Length: 257
Image (cartoon, rainbow, N blue to C red; front, side):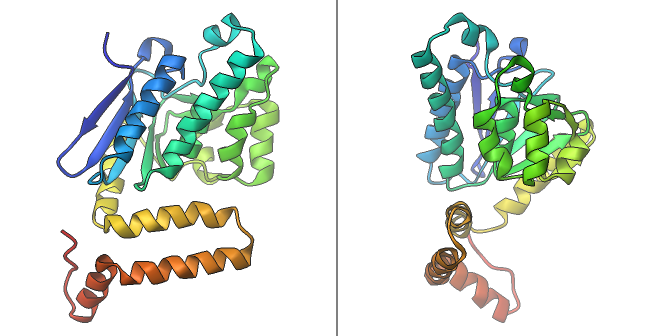
């Protein structure tokens, strides 16, 4: 059997992680979570990595946790371990120094919707649909609510959480859950366009910026400005900023290679 997550890396440092259990729509089984964690850990050790794309094989992106596994082990300790494992995966995405892009088609529900929300960027096909549907089965999607609330307006997030209703790709874009929506046949090209835009920028600046972006969001405004100012000062001392501003004054393209 092929790996649960396929790891592909090109010579530009673009890494594609493909959820590869299409028979169960790429549910976040224990196997899948472990494989995704291992892949993200591998990316974290790759100092020349530039962008990560999380994609999925088959008809769907991800329906969330594997319900058969969850029902099969009705023990508090098991559930605590499972949700902690999933949270570690989500935090690993946040902690990577490179942008992580979700390539979404088909359904992304419950923890699958959480995965989309946790990625830094998301591009969806127009046939994609999203829901946090645990409440339909008596389980409020508490862990998916964490990144959902950090992407969407509170009332929009709460409506999804208390109704379990699906929203379309276009609604997801309007509400801030995804960045771009295109026809399915254009999905790869649109992801590639976004990847190319990131690759044209210096890795060091993006790494500093991503860390700052998430840290300052949890702070009061004064502390956020203090941290942001310090980050910009350090960034200005980096060779990438020095080259960028020198190139601007010399009216040429910067050379970050």
